[in-house]
Length: 265
Image (cartoon, rainbow, N blue to C red; front, top):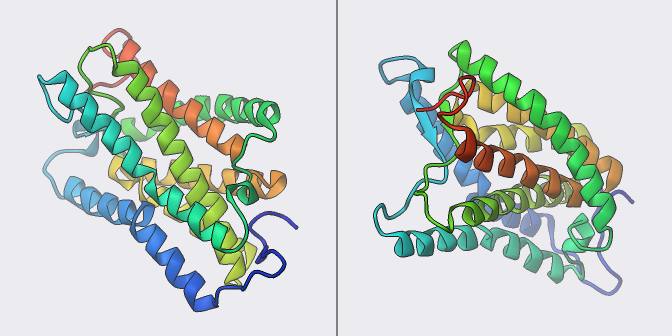
């Protein structure tokens, strides 16, 4: 059985009702990326109704939480990263109720080298096309200028950027791909409808970047769902997403203002 395509309940474990599965899924999304999608939509409305073009506005990620106070800033950064992963812990709890675990979604250390190899290959392909698409979308006025990081130049800057990238990857791939596809399958959704739901959700919480961010991430979502169904594991997707975000965050920190092709705020 392909991960995410059936109920996958262990012997002797009582199956939750469809209503429980539906309500549980809504709550997980409301506490995580579903809420981020609504927030991104509100932000996008604010951007398109603001005087001036989208490319003249900026969307800043990984900003300082306490300017001029590096230790307090570090505490806030680590707090934000840790609390953002609570919905993943909630997903793990719900899977345990079924007699399962995150291993059911392919998020474990049983196949580290295949996961790393596949993830690196995905990142190489998507990373190059993604940069080109972003630059084109911004040039056409469909996207804001994305500022991947605006942290102070302190010793913990790069470790925090890497941790932030990994946190994004774990949260998104476990919930938007592994967990959501599993639950929608248990609720009787057709594979095509579940794919669309996952891809649209991924695009929705990137809408704060503009139309380009929405469309680009929706396409990425389609590719990731297809790969998950092929491999039955979110592990390679977490690796790929981590590498993509590390490249964006750290790359911007190293190159901003030093190369002419990289837009800055």
